Length: 230
Image 1: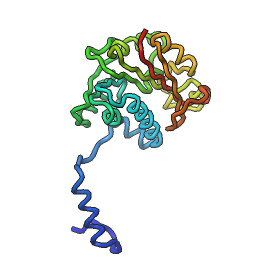
Image 2: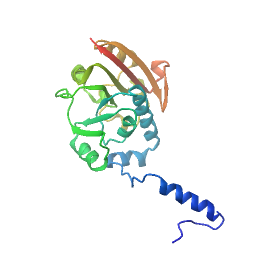
Image 3: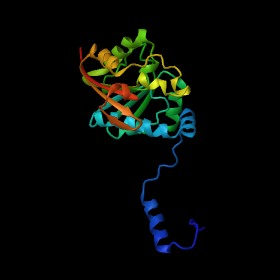
Image 4: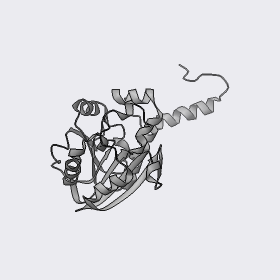
């Protein structure tokens, strides 16, 4: 059966194209989780922004032996981190997300577990620990427990990265994106909170997929990179 449409492309070009495909390692098709599929179909550009955030974490953790994600949802970007980190452990407190990850993602260097970081730290300690789009869902009275249990899940020389939508961004956010946002902060307040827990806190901003160090009130998204716990 002829695999090509049309008649103009040469047989030589067609043969080279198919030969290149056959030489590549074939992985089959990768299925998105149900929730991720919803976001992709409703607002696909948000996938670009999400990948950009994970790329930043991967660059900061490049060369690490291990990293843990808190709030991995359906594990869409775990592979982005694992390209830079030898072993990645992904956690979420919603068990159906973890079950979905375990069904779909078959990378021996990426593991998944249901765990609520507000309950306890993890038994294993990781060189890098991070949570993106999680902190804003943590009620203010639990924010210090959240940070402390992440610190207790780190190695003594580890690095913590948190990413959240800024308080100022909420005036422009859609209603679905604001669901559960009970603890967004300004850049100044976010940094001050982390400085209570760490000696070194480095702040970055992001607008769409663009990372920068600009004026906090004009930043849609905030990152803190923290090390040396107090």
